Image 1 (cartoon, rainbow, N blue to C red):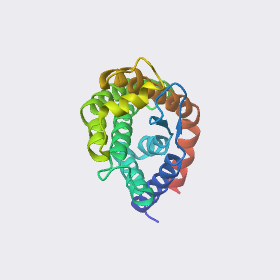
Image 2 (cartoon, rainbow, N blue to C red):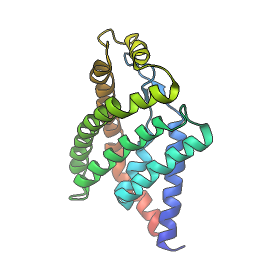
Image 3 (cartoon, helix red, strand yellow):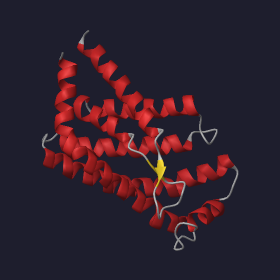
Image 4 (cartoon, one colour):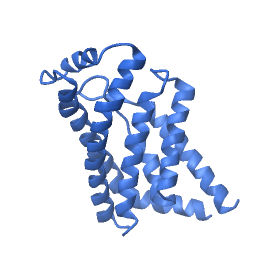
Length: 200
């Protein structure tokens, strides 16, 4: 099996794993019920660190395509899957930008923390101008209804802007930190194992 085929197989396996992990999404106490946590970005991160950011983004894309094809989407246009892809891709690009300069645990930590901050800012803008309006358009209910749902978890939320500030931003910060805490202790061993498999 040549190297290109091995990489393709690895991307396929990591994409499938990411899709399966994506199915295990769960709500977080104190956050709006529609903001669910999952760790499906981990396989894409692993693929990106080993094969490059392009492979990581491909894994993110395939994972979300599988999710649409096999489980369906809440909306005609897959808004949620787009949001997942965008957040994961931003996280991967920023992490790899730091990690590929110097492949150390410290560089990975700094890269993932930087990725958390940058992803949080960009996704806040996308949620305000594109994602929440997209859900409202394709699901046929108002943004005010979404704000009302979020208010059940946090009384400080009374508009789309406060939903972003008190809901989306802290949620993405928490998710990025949790991904970092999981990734740092396993990255070195897991990376070495997969590199051996690719080279075999």
